[in-house]
Amino acid sequence: MSSNLDSPEVFSEILYEKMKRINIGVDGLELYEFRYALNNLYPENGGWASVELAEKEEIETLINQSDFYAGIQLKPRVNDRIVLDENIVRLTNMLFVGLVTGGYSEDWVRARFYFDIRGFYFLTRTVYFTQKVLAHFGGRPFKSFERRQKRFEPYQDVGYKDFKEANAEVDQAFVESVKRLIATKGTPILLAIAGPTAAGKTEIVERLRRSFEQTGKQVASIEMDNFLTDRDYREEKGIHSLGREAIHFDLFKHSLETISQGQKISIPRYDFVYATSSHDLGGTLKAGCTPIEIEPADIVFIEGNFPFLLEEVVHLIGIKVVYLTDDAIRMKRKWKRDIDYRKKYEPTYFRNRFFSQQFLMAQKCYLPQMEVCDIVVDTTGAALWVAPEIAEILSPG
Image: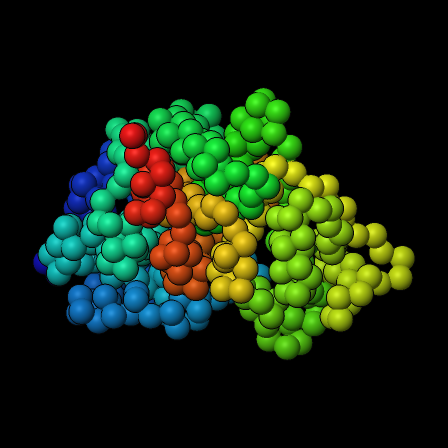
């Protein structure tokens, strides 16, 4: 096997064939295109033969530790250019070499990692349906549909038109389920939809909004980000953006209580340019600032990453939803949305950030909410999961 590692040409030929089975999209590349991308990861000091493989058990332990992801540098630089974090490069190169030498089987790699062609690196797979989550939903989905997102596998990026078409059946089932729940539970009602970035939350909320308005319902939205305290204060105190310490919690709780009783509310306004709140830490409006006025409505959406992560307000939320799309598809959505359209990130910073944040956010934010929510819309699995008490309401007869 050493000759395979000593010759970059032989190494790339073998890896190219194996990577077609890891990600079928690689088959859409010519060998010379594959080599262009591979050359960016070539170990300068010693070539592929210099890459030492870790034991599989060691890798499995590493990728399940929060410290590993927290330690990823988002903007490491070489010659004033942002580069991939050295730990990401090492992991990807180990997987490349392990595939070529047979040190790691293709099945083992596929089960724990996915390969992003456009970023040309391996990322770890997040397990969202843990045993605890499955137990919460009775072990099986309420409804299942054809998995139309499978056609995205060869794609390097995914636009919203294709995404919307692939999710049409499960989205429609979700909209109808929400309508039925609201008809049973009554209004006013608070409806919170959480989920990872680029999962499709904004779009499904807009679809629900239009659907309700067409039937004459009054709709309003509360954005949790408007309750953030000043960023300088949070950074000074080392406060993470998740959790009650990061927001004007008493104002948030009082606002939910008030609007759920059909009354108008006045909430803080967060300035995203200057990262400051309209309210001081005591909850008083600062001089010269203007709050946001929200009129009472039949359905009030709570928009944010952690709407029902806060135990003190969970009981106020009438319908709790996690809208989920697997990481590999979200990555492709973000390439199209955030890099091509929004020009939001420097691409390599984006790659480091996505690698680092997915595991951490799943552990801190999304899994805990999946364990207590009423509904999970799994767009990649094309399934609707509902808690047993919700299934009783939605089941025919």
